[in-house]
Image (tube, helix red, strand yellow):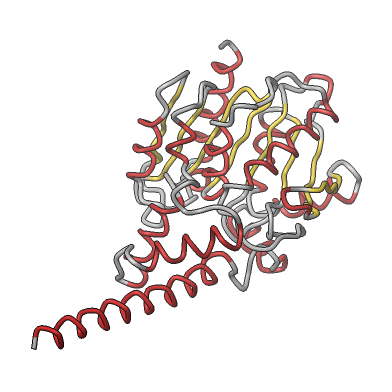
Amino acid sequence: MKKILNLAAVLFAASFLLTGCLAGRYMCNYALLPEEHGNDFTGDRAKTEGRYPGIMAWYDGLHDSGIFKDTTLVGEGGYKLHAVFAPAAVPSRAQGTAVVVHGYTDNHICFLNLVRMYRDDLNYNVMVPDLHYHGLSEGRAVQMGWFDRLDVKRFAAMAHDIWNDDFMVVHGVSMGGATTMMLSGDDDLPPYIRAFVEDCGYSSVWDQFAHNLKDSFHLPPFPVLNSASIVCKHRYGWGFKEASSVAQLAKCEKPMLFIHGDKDDFVPTDHVYKNYEAKVKGYKEIWIAPGSEHAMAFKDHPKEYTDHVRAFLAKAKTL
C-alpha cells in the first residue's frame, strides 16, 4: 500500500508539473504574443480621438506639414524600430526634450495627449517611439519594458543628436511607466537624461502577471508563472523577476515623479507605493489622481496633471 501511495504521489506531482509547464507556455504566448499589439491604427485613432476630441486633426496637420517626422533605428536584437518626433512649438525657446513611452499593446498614437502637453503647453521637443513588437516597429514579442528600456535609450540618443539638449525627461504610461523606471536604474545613463515621470507602471513583470493570473484566471503564481518565466527566458533572454522596476529604482539617483490613479485595478495602486519606497536616492515626488482608473489620470485631471509635471520639471532642472 505504501508503494502504491508513493507511486500515486509521484504521478500526481508529475501530472501537476506537466500541467503547470503547459499552462506556463500558454501564458507566455498569451501575454507576450497578443493578437493586437498596437497594429490596429484605425481603432487606436478612434479611441484616442474619443478621449481627446480634435487631437487627431492636431497630429495629422503637423504630420502632413512635415513638423512631425517619422524615423527608424536598429534596436535590441537587430529589429527596426519606428518613432515620430517634432520640435517644440516655439523651437527657439525649447525647454528641453521629452521622450514619451506608450503602454502594452499601444503605439505612438495612443498618448498624443501627453505629446501635445509637452510640445504645446510645456514647449518641449518630443520623441515618441513605437516599442519592440508594437505599432510600426518590428520585433519577436512584447518585452514588458525590460529590453524596451535599451531601445528608449537609443531613441533618447537620437533625440539628443537632433536637438543637442542638456535636459531630457522620459515619461511613460503603464508598461511605458515600467520601461521608464527600468531605464532609470541603468549605470550607463547619459548625462542629458535628467528626469523621469512614470504613470501607473507596475513594480515588476512578476508582480503584474501574478495579479493578472489571480484576477482573470483565479490561479496562484506557482507553477504557471514559474514555467512561463522559464519559457520567456529561453525564448527572449529575460525572466519575469529580473524585469523589475523596484530593483532598478533602488539604483536611480535622478529625479522622478510617480503618478497613479487611486481606482486603478489593472495595475493596482499599491504598486506605486512599492515603487516610490524603492527609490531611496535622489529627489522624488508622488501624485495619486483621485477617482482615476488605469492610465486615466490625465483624462480625468488634465490641468492638475500638467501642473504637477510642469512643477516637477522646474524642480528637476535645479538639481
